[in-house]
Image 1 (cartoon, helix red, strand yellow):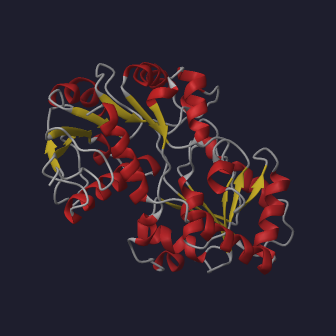
Image 2 (tube, one colour; image 1 turned 90 degrees about the vertical axis):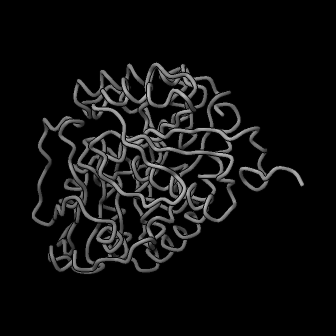
Length: 378
């Protein structure tokens, strides 16, 4: 009999290989980028447990800084705390040293600039845009780092064809070492909905419009306040869920307030599922997205979606969303009226959303990612 394959249908590894994963994300609050890292690692571990991936031929170790606090409950992938620094200093100074005996996988945009034998997932290059979205320090560091690593590392994954074109535009990355691999969506089913979030904030089921994200100016939540001012005799609320990262985003402008807008802050996965499932519709008027997790999550849970017709969103949502110009509040107002006031239209977009969401799978994402890593980095 021949050697057991790494994945069924994939090529064999010559010898047992050591792969390290940049675990800085385990010290961070979970947003879309961190969610991607969690799900990939979980699916790799599940593949080892089921025997689909040969655990005897690959050693995966997640290297973490001392302030890592998230527990992944893995059976085959090892977590190892190393170094004395945290954050960027740990990632740039200590991580290269501790990962020197193997390949390094970076799943959350950032990577050590000194390493060559590594893979990095770059979700978007929004820091290169001429906006006030990011703090000056964050923008300066990330534009420098992404310019270096995108050309220096062996492999680059990005999450949409749009993001690939942006990488080529701003970083001049070679297409030969890049691959587009879409996210999955099954994580939304892993917890039960916590309906207590509705009572806690006085939210009536199916009588609110939902928006989800960090309060990043790029997410364009101001448009929501402007749109609802154009809706006569408003009899529903707007619920905005998400945290604010003051060290990353520039918050010099205050957000417009409206008496029908309810900011519920950072919510748990169970609370978020409840908010998606009980919303009348979901709005995402973002100016720029590398992928756009929230619209896909909403579709997966049966919530009809309104999104900007910009960047990656048409690629991800296809015909399963109502599209608007993110600079025209009247278009958002019309979209909200359509989905909140027309049950037939709402049901049509719910069904289209389910069909579209079926294109995305964490299992497929995990397999494609590891196969791409195996091609050269290993």
